[in-house]
Structure formats: C-alpha cells, structure tokens
Length: 186
Image (tube, rainbow, N blue to C red; front, side):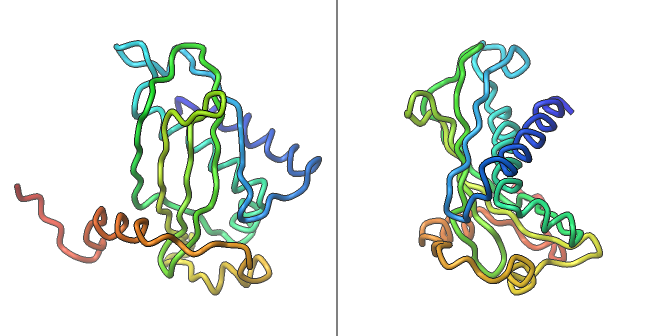
C-alpha cells in the first residue's frame, strides 16, 4: 500500500502515453521520472534498499501498459509473478533526488520472461535489477508462451534471446518447485 498512489498515477499516465505516443515494441525502453520521497528513506537518510524494488514495479507497470501487454493479460485473466530478482547498487539516491526508471524486456525462455530495470540519474546508472517473472492463469496453471504469443499476434521478431549468464543466474538462484520439499536446514 505504501506506493499505491504512485502506482495508480503511473498506470494512468502510461495509458495516456499509450494513446498519444503509440505502443512500445518489445525491445523499446520505457522511462518514467521519479523523485525520492521522505517515505523512501531508511535511517541512513538515503533510499531504502527494499524501496528500489517497489519503485521498479512502477517501471514494470509502465512497460506492460505501453506495450499493450497489460490489456492482453487483463482480457485473458493472466497475471505475472516475480519468481526471482537480483539488484545491484552503485550509488545512493538522496532525499528529493529525481531519477529515471528505465525498463526493458530482456527476452524469455520456456518458463519465464526476463526484464531489466535501472535507476538512472543524468544518464548514469545508480542501481539495476534483473527480474524473472512467470506468467500464470487466474483459472490455475502456468501460461505457455504459445498461448501468450497467440494472444499478441505471434512472437515478436525483434525479441532477443536471453543471454547465457541470465540463465545461469536463474538456475543458481532458484528454489525447488512448490510441489517439491524445501526444508530449511542450515
């Protein structure tokens, strides 16, 4: 709930940008401007590390809306869940500092869609996150890429293959499936 107003504003603005500027392709970069607010800070008076992930969600909403994916997902009762993500920090964002969230699709494999989000100040990367998201059906089950591509008119030709290190990261950071045992033993 702590970023709900920002989320609603980003979704509203993304719809306006979609109507006025047209649809983004699967390789376009989405950019939104954000300001570090007092509620984003931790006790060290810079942006809290967990807040980056919440704000990167804003970039994901903008990207999904402006590519038309949000409408396709809504029409078909599909949704995406983040199955893993990793964030790397370079510089701290300070109170009232304005920055851009840049978001793009990295590609997909048979189980997931991969995205990248960056916090950028004056063209310089402050933080980056790689996201692995699974597409699910509200009726239950995982959405196949065949179903997804059929709904959007085919696989976008410009969609790149996922680079090998992303697959290595996904394998190294994965947990057992929800149907398998996953005991917490140290």
